[in-house]
Structure formats: C-alpha cells, structure tokens
Image (cartoon, rainbow, N blue to C red; front, side, top):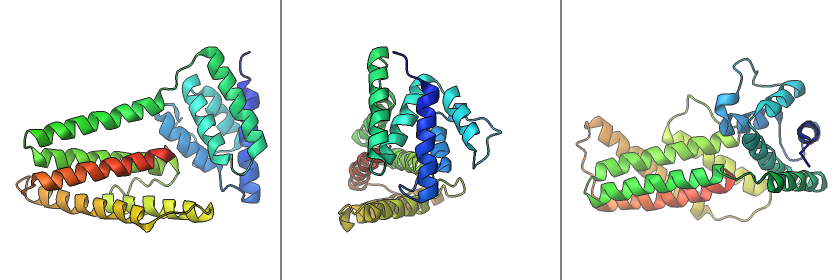
Length: 240
C-alpha cells in the first residue's frame, strides 16, 4: 500500500511543534529545514524563510524527491525517538514497510562511505608516491567537508566560519552538550583527539599556504593526519 505522505509529514510536524512548545527533545522547524538543506540542497526554494511556518514546511517535504523525503523523515524520527517513542515507532514502521514494498534502495549513507573511501584512496596514493603536501591538503579538505556536513545536519552552520579550528569548536561543543543532556558517558580523550588533530591540520595548512607550498611535510605527519582524520570522520558519521 502506498504511503500517505501528507499524513506522515503532518505527523512529523505535529511532533516537531510539540517539541518546540514543550522543550522536550529540543527539535525545531529550523533544525528540520537545516536537515532538508543538507539532504537535498537543490530543492530548497530561495524564497523560504529561515523560520518557515508549518504550511511552508509541509509543501517543502512533499516537493522533495521520494528518496530524499524518506531520508529526511527517517532522520528526524530517529532524532525525536527518545522523547516521543510510540508515535515515532509507528512512523518508522510505516516508512520501513513502504520502503520494502517499493524496493527503494538506501543510497545516501553508502554514498558518504564511498566518498570517504575515495578520499582515503587518494590520500594513500599521495603518501605512497611521496607527495606528502598533497596528502595533507586532501586530508584537510576531507575534514572540512565532514565538519560542514555535521554542522549542517545539527543546524549549527555559519558560512562565515569556514575556519577549521572554529568549526571543530562548534562540533565539540555540540557533542559535549548532546552527551551531557542525554546522560551519555563519554571520555575527554575523544574530544581532545578532535581538537588536537584539527589544530595540527590548521597550523600545518597555514604554514603550507604562507610558504607557497614549500613548507616541508614528512611521511609521519601525513600518516598521522590521515589516520586520525579517518577516526574523526567515522565518529561523526554516527550523526549524519
């Protein structure tokens, strides 16, 4: 049976409005818009405001391609699940049944994994051929892209902050607050890894740029950056 998208989208918007009104779950229309902007950036009307009303959000969801609509509803439902368990489970079951009937593939996560693997392959190739500066530049680009994707997904992205250190601060602040709010135990070592590796990359790239690419990069630094950025990206992928 075909999914009643109007019903399911309205059900999601009901939960978001309840979250806004009660403060339970800390979800908002703005966060939903940020998720849509990340999942389907080409389908955001230029006229939509930063604080869209319910009617505008409903039309936005219904106008999305079906696979992107699935992803937005599933991700939003998982974010709301700890606070609105029963209605979210019903929504997720309806989405899963519809996906099985239509045999629609789940492709975006696979695309992200493929993207990470492509980057790692290029970085490994650069290291293998002794092009350590290129390996650092690729590693820096990889981390920046995933920081951007992470911050967009949690609706905390400011285009004026394309500074790697500032982005890492925003990422770490969100993760710490999320763990504390949900009483999830965490180690400071994970946060320290993110800030330390980011600072190494930021400092190294600044020296490379100031020296017009003549700043010496050795194999050990390139491998250190590659391996630790891989760890950070896989950790952040839990939120994407």
